[in-house]
Image 1 (tube, helix red, strand yellow):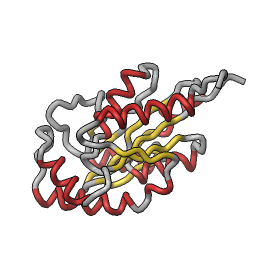
Image 2 (spheres, one colour):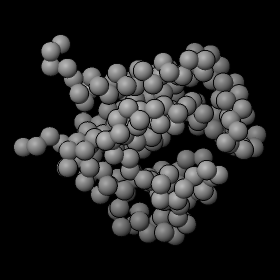
Image 3 (cartoon, helix red, strand yellow):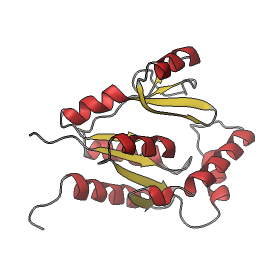
Length: 199
């Protein structure tokens, strides 16, 4: 029997640097499959429909829910996101490894159906979580969030922190040394997916 593909999920609170780490990982592992999720939120500047997300209205999204097309879907920061099950199944059955940035709920839902999923949680350094999130979000030129939106994300992050013990790995992303998190995630992937038989 040919090798089945594995799924690696990367989760963590808003502003922690998931997308930055993901870009570096995808450069290191260009063969990784990247599922394109569906969302009801608007397309942000710099994003491309069909490349970053499939941007759809709520009617289309809920028709997909009714047709059981999603392996997981969740409301995150007042918008809905969903991962199409057929996409993941095709990748797994073809032996293609998948790397996906996803919220906690999504990662936990995926691992129920694909128990070999490797779940990585990216966290802020020790300290006041609310302050760190607020600082990173306010200093991010790509995000133009209101104070109310930042507060919502802080509350969500505090809830997510309480679930990190459910993940296979927890990686800290220090703001002054972002390469450290990339290095840690890269090592996890190599050890889990491509172990050295000589060790």
